[in-house]
Image (cartoon, rainbow, N blue to C red; front, side, top):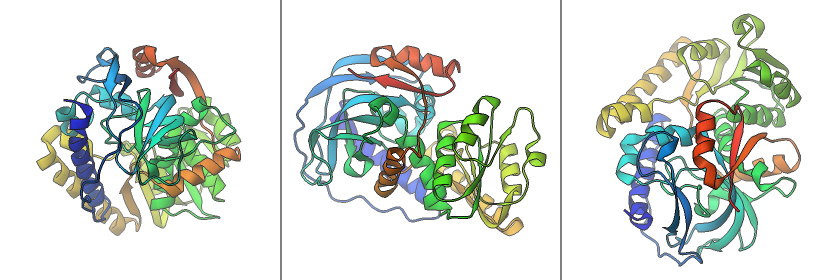
Length: 381
């Protein structure tokens, strides 16, 4: 299947995910618009890392002359300079989301990107050819960013912060937008509130600490010993080493919002116990994709909806709090604010190691074996 053919399936996948996301967050999912004309991009083929089957790092294949689809009016062709590896990439490679993605193979993995605008669709107004940009694709993208030329919609991109490199920029958008959606779009945090970040050592958790601090919140986090100093330097008032301390004894007081990036039953119990009445608990570990993989879309998504609604009712009645499964979504306003914070030196995510795109298998293997705890970047020359 070519990527131009798979674009129709990708749109269907996006609609399925939007529908599930709308149900799982008690919102209405909108219908798609009528098809719009396409425009020819300047590149017709390029290098890309394909995933023709699910499996280990060996399943990734670097190919030349992979088709570059025509641009839709709202789309931007980006010449990639650096892309980061997210946990979602390694999970998808191993088969996570199989119920949605298996009919769409081969996939191109990758969500984050930093590079230059190579071409724009007819209706794009905020970006021009030659501008340095960074951004992130939605989680259901079939043609990702592990490629010389990636395609993103206009609202998934903004100008790259001038003060940082492409490698540094490429690790920010997906993690920061995930944290932004939880804290700003869902919990609507404001100055003076208390925020607890469970798992502040990972990219999403670390971004959440910085976003909450930038919004004038008092932040407490849990993390491993190697992340304590970094969390405190980012503005957390307290960083608890979960490997050596009893979290429930070490942390005092109640919180307006809890972001749980770990998402197990125990962290959920602890997080909810720390919330004030009217507070928001948000976990990254929703059950929609896993249940759909286990039982199929027709059974899995309704089962996930029922599970979420049950928990929301249960916790609202027993604790007086709001419960959410949270996911990254494109947010042009959020991405602009993230860029401004990065420019000001108030939001950064460290890069632990870079690999050339030709060593993508080695990069995935290193992440899978936890040889590199932090962010890994693939460079495209």
